[in-house]
Image 1: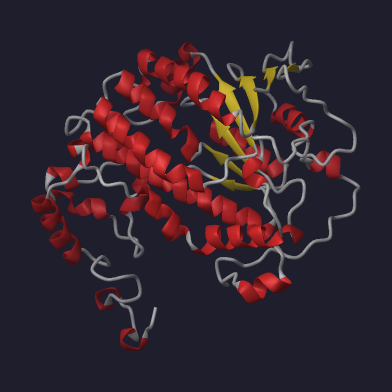
Image 2: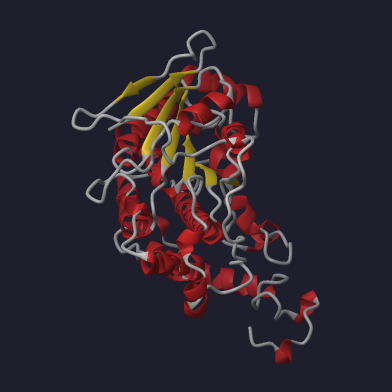
Length: 397
């Protein structure tokens, strides 16, 4: 396991501590194909490669694959980077700055609250008063305010929804890289959600039964995703995390049981003992003391020193990003781009032994009736005449 760690203190930030594996030392050589930032690229001629493929408008099929091989767009910056850390660590700010400096796309962490706005802009939370308790909306603010609502069942369903949203975003990030050649920086990934579930279990927010079911869903789905090239973990002491949470004073966060020292300590412990240990066998890991926010340029310099091509076909690291041949790349590109609904189906594990998250048939029937009467929800977008959709009779999709 290789950890690159640089402390954020201005007095000590000139040194880099590299802890290498006993069996294989990490050697950085001049002229390697590593990620390069704007400063390093200054004065160099632009790389000649095909323009990004418009994968959201056009379908990447067999005929296009004959003329448009996937690897023709990939270069040293075609990487997936994930920034992790406890709440209020500064993940989003660092991810944005890294994306800007490395000329990558920034994919922000998804919000459950956005799911309650339908495709016509109608806020579904307006019909909560018509729904049974089990079917009422439950977003990030509700989660912080009352994680024990419904004996923890709402929190359990919330976390499963969050996993689904992160899973889909990860698929979109992979599709973006393979179709455009542009790297992606994200804050949080579906691989780290287990740390939060572990902390919630240890602090009594959810039951062990829900935790075991979450494990089943996770194990049934995450195998289909390619793990990131690089994980950056921002290490912040619990007392400093609490200070930042109180300082930013977000609604319902400061006094939530999900921001207590006990919960935050359980979260940090799970991150370090479980997530970082596991992901480091597949990806490079940079760990920073972020108790004082450092200059992002320091992180960029460390990233530029990493040789992502040093591993061979027998190494676990970067295994997900090694394909057999060009057609293997093309097939993966097609799958991540146009078969996301099939991959998302891996999350649909029947909760046979987890009644806590099941919504009863009676409540579901009431919800279905209410949704049919809600503006823009009865039919798919484009097929709701009450919302002003025209030419419905002649539409095929």
